[in-house]
Length: 434
Image (cartoon, rainbow, N blue to C red; front, side):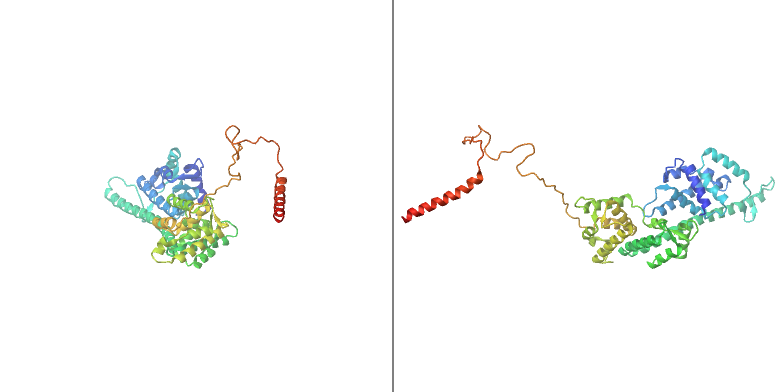
């Protein structure tokens, strides 16, 4: 889509769709704001309001499913809105006609009435099969009926072609995405590693950090990892991701088609797994700790004997290492990084049951270890009190109490006693000999 058309779509989005400029509108609000009365085909009485509205809802829902990847897109940003109209742009060569297609259905009531009146005043007879739709005088009813029938058939044929063309574009996009995703899923755990390697290659080729790389480099990377694209798929990728027709592919948008945000159910499983593996409650998981806890005996591919258990462990270890290379992280995963890593895992698990098996039934949870802070106080001592380790206070015991208040020199006492004992022993020996 050209820059001028992108500017038209942006203006419509911020003028009519999101006048508060919040940056995002729910898909439900988008559908409710669409007004088929302003569509050029309705103004020119070529189609009914119901037909236009039905076509919009069908194509918009199909696009949201395509844009959302594993989960349907529920929030529409300017980028999503512009991406949708990039498909519509294929149908119109004239910029003026394209502008009428995108402005009319989103205008409020007053502006819509004014535009519709101007549209009818400038409207020219539309030629179908080389014939203009004429107005006939009375008395020529038979001729009028024949021409009107011809007009109706031609009109129906044109509408059918337009609808088929939009459907083909949507189907082509869905086919391109599903073919690449199927290639990765069929590789099992190797598919996860391939996706990470492709991401790393794209990042290294994007030397200017713009999110764009040359078309030739893009195709070479896919060929390197044995992802074969048909001609229709190549054409779709070039039309969708070469935004400015300058030979540069937006690799971030391309990867976002496959590596979409985790759905709420999958995110809950990943968060639960993180809590179960974090046995020290440090809010971090070391890479080696993750690998040691991984036990893929219940992995769908291991259970069906498509891969061996030790091969699955090695693939996970390689995938963790590759992710850390891409993200620039060290050896520890925080929750946000752990969730981001499982976005890649999610891209290689199409079925919810398979993802649940990987996230919940392929791990040996370690025992929780509590961090006990040892007290430096001696046993028997309590803060704020003096504990008596001898006799109770005066008057509470029948034992004699020593009232001496002077201190005795214990060191001298210890020295004198051995000397006294030695002298006594000498005297007793002399008495025996005598």
